[in-house]
Image (cartoon, rainbow, N blue to C red; front, side):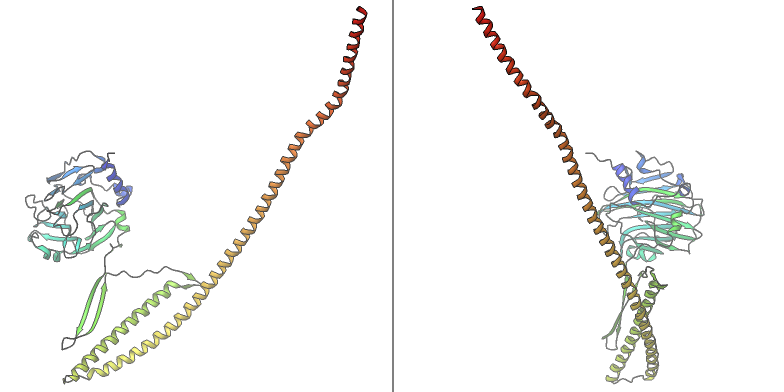
Length: 462
């Protein structure tokens, strides 16, 4: 069976990508700065886009890197005249995984340099904005933003290149059958880069001039990573769903920083860790008698944070006292001036601990009350369910008895009807018996009389 990849690709886009725009959004499309719907055409004819390199158009996909060691670019010589714009593209990466030396460049630049393809299929000395999608950096596959005024050549810098990006996020896009949607939005000196409707990075410190030009390019090496362009649209404004999802960040992993404290001899005396990029916990609101469980949990979280701070303070005090003890044992003069400071801190900490114990006691009382209320509600609900269940069982039994009685009545009616049908036949037979017997006797008499008459006639004739 031959598969029509054109319609399969279109189905994937409709089911997995996030570009279901409103009618007002679709009116913002600038067709001259966009590609047509690739899934609906048989061949790509781009009167405004200049194609260079080794791309291939196949079954609704514009394949930028169809083979090993290939590259391609699409550039538009029309200037973007909008103060506010959105550039949206849907991309898929299949093939090799990891540091492949491959990548995609999306540029908003003053001019195109078609001769220089050293920077992901484009020029490294660009003047404008460049958003790079690649997996060659120290943190794996990422989306990064770069700015340049044309004076610095970013190609050939290796991993030091990634230190020059002004914004980035991790993006797991490699070797996936599911495409991802990338948007670049600019309005009111705010630049937003979104991936699948979530913010990758955002800045309010960029002033991009008007009348720059769009271009997109890609490159791959021996480790073939095939980049497929499935959609590319330019809008002369900000899409409504961009504003709706303006504060939804893309999911990022935690970064754990470890701090190790050493004494004068180089021995480890303390170790602490700090986590960043961790989302705040979200509690659902549940009200019982105007008591907010969400508020209660929030306060408990605050207490836990305070306890954590107290423990860290105690740990710091213990570490310094340990260091003081080590210095004393080693014969060094110990600075005892901050013992009084520590004593005051300990007194303050004791007061805080007493306050916390009081708050914890109050919260425990509230939690016990809440548990009692919940148990009461559960018992009431259980009793109600049991009562309803018993009523349903009784009703079922009554229905069963009614059905049994109905069945008996039906059987009786059937028997009665059958009996009625048999009785007329029996009565008819009895009546016939009464009539048949005299007739039989009469027939016998007639036979005997006829025989005697024949005998008498025969005798006289002889």
